Image (cartoon, rainbow over all chains, first blue to last red; front, side):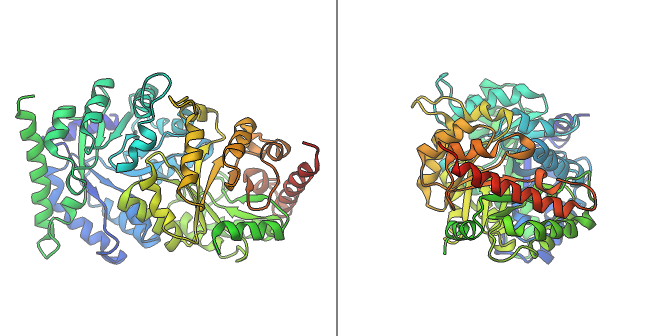
Length: 264
Length: 264
């Protein structure tokens, strides 16, 4: 089974497009408590999760103890729920091979986010794993994303459109990262590459709206997951944090479902 | 003192543009022997090194024991020799902050390579450290680098030229990564941004020639370092590996110096 088949199956079983981001805030935790915090979040959100997505930067900032906590946290994720490592890696040749080995073999992630600035040979080592997948950065959710991604090329396309078309031509195991904060560009990418699975960050703390995302890209199991991190993990910062995280994940699932029922 | 001032001072003191890449081959080592191998390489090459550059992918592939070996290896680098972490990180907002914290505070690297596809706000957290520097990926040394980096923009520039101009406008603590395998593009970047420090990988195993690099970009302490990894670390794979590594680093230093004396 490919990663995207597994993602579709889980998304359908949970009737959820929610990707739960596991991104611990440096100011709120010590490394030693990360794993138990994450485990509580995972337990309370699993029912509503199509997948999990730890961004490895948030563990790397704690140094090796942070990575040990990530390793421990991953054990709490039920095996039927796919895990995407948000790593935005990108290098070439034997270095890209080393990253792919690190993420897919050493860590055992099912998928990873990848930066394709270096081109197809730089991405190829990630695609050498037939049961794994990558999400290539296409149009990101930050304000400065326009700076390069919306440069107009001589061929008439914008850079993010060129990336969308080129990267998805490499393999059916390639999806794209497109931010929820740019619903027009999201709709544009959905039209350009109708079959590509999309990973959509930027709802919640960053301001993207679930209904805009579904209006732009549709509601189809396995064709899109919508990530929220802070708005789930820190929905409440008191002793009821786990319950609040579960409620926030359920609410996002329901908002996405409800948006699917709205007239287009 | 800024990072680039430290790099210039060291480069001048050693009269060397050599950046020694510390990139252990997965097939040749176990994690447990990495640190002592690196220490031997460092000891034998330090005299000829303007700087060191571990690519963190090669440690991540070994998992947490690999990162522990990197931590141990760094202790062997003399304090007057700057260290660049080749990490090609790139993310946004609080995630970019987490990467900057990881590389500059937790690890203590003086500089890091960064992918700027996400734009200036994504890079800003790295530039919040006045004594640190970044090298932004501009024109890389792999065959597929043309695919996106040489896309012609509506404004007439190629994407890598746009990246060179834009990224170096953000801060004087920004240098660029330009591969030795593309000497024409290297000369072009040198002309476009004469003051920007360049990190030039791709000599040795990848086929770039020291004389072409110097012809393209000049020989000026602090304005360029030329990286070789495999051709130094694995110059000899027998018991004489450390001696051979030192000789290979010296040879590269001398070839670069000699090229500086050639008529243009």
